[in-house]
Length: 151
Image 1 (tube, helix red, strand yellow):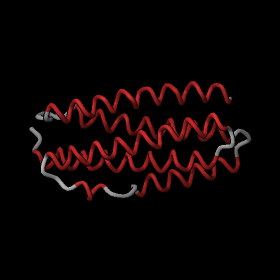
Image 2: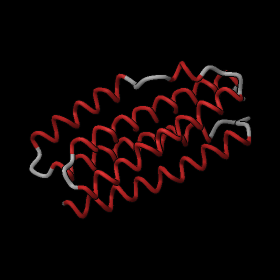
Image 3: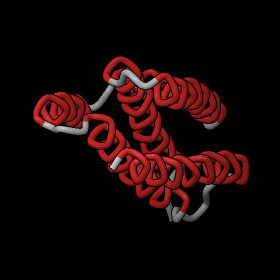
Image 4: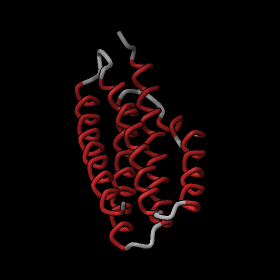
């Protein structure tokens, strides 16, 4: 049985993961030339910004401090730098960027599944996370489709 404190800690980790995704997509907007991809990535910048606000609200509703999740994780900062390196050496940078974004989404998807598997998760939290996870599923699918187009 998880405690409210454990739930809040995991929600703060999801908050950080969403900051990571927001900043990663923001960098992807800058790294691609194709207007279609720029628009695609901007959509996900905005979505992850909203996800962050959703999570902050839920953390506060549970009595937690969402400021603990502020910023990006060290691992994701390194991941974004690796994306820059891969872009620089890749003959097809759009495909490489799409693949790195897909990998990031898969990691986020796993983190959401971990929290959703917790016992005693409040119904409002569960509903919010399921909604986010559905949108993450869609992002993974769209990233795979786009990657095939740029292959």
